[in-house]
Length: 66
Image 1 (cartoon, rainbow, N blue to C red):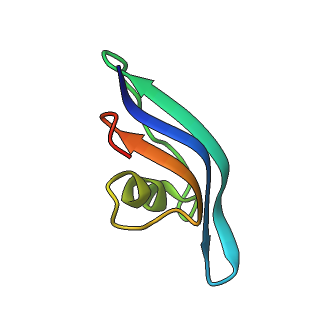
Image 2: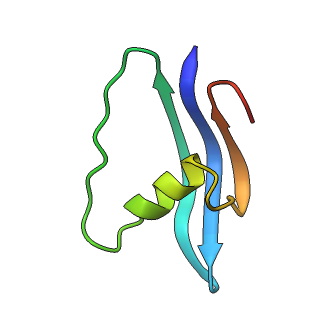
Image 3: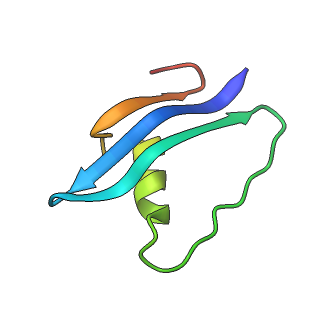
């Protein structure tokens, strides 16, 4: 079972691509850390996962719910 499954996700804000062509799968039992410089898109990525923002293109599934 996948906890998170992202396929070809894009997110554009004000004409600027914040997330480009991201595919990522987190499976049960895995542990991840999200690291990056200020302004690199970490918070935007978390907002996409939690549905506070909607992807411009692509598919996001959390706990097998699209």
